[in-house]
Amino acid sequence: MEEKPREFRTVRGYQIKQQQTNPITASMEDYVEMVYRLADEKGYTRIGDLAAALNVQPPSASKMVQKLAEMGYVQFEKYGVIELSPNGYSLGAYLLKRHETLERFFKLLGVQEGLLEETEKIEHYITPETVKKIMLLVEFMENHPEWLEAFQSFCGC
Image 1 (cartoon, rainbow, N blue to C red):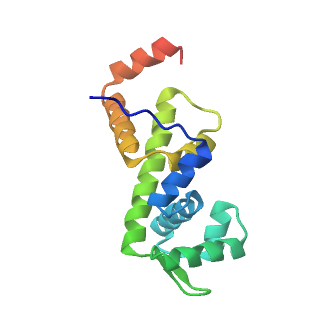
Image 2: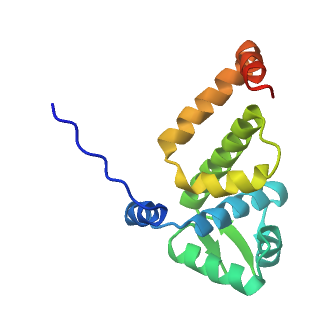
């Protein structure tokens, strides 16, 4: 059987390809994840809290929340509470799990500097399959400290 040639793209090309199959952008994911986080902590989310948590201006947060409401991820009334829809809730849970998995993975690798920034940059560009495989590797390493110690010895971490 003949192997299909690989189709290389620029990073932007991969982003465009991804947007064709998944209309939610990286920024939208950040908002859904943060609404999920804040609602989990307080039981609710407001625009001001969301804007502060993401270091954006309230009008920007309001516009994005309106887009997410149009897409069916949140329910929102002006000056009211932001609530995740069932789809938004399951997406938020996945996004938080993805973030935490990558953060745990980088910590296992010994990454210390810029951990949050590295996680934020990478999390939007990997597939659910890759997340699942990284999650399994993280769980394996955490449950088999001898493997983690061997890795740390190998890299001098």
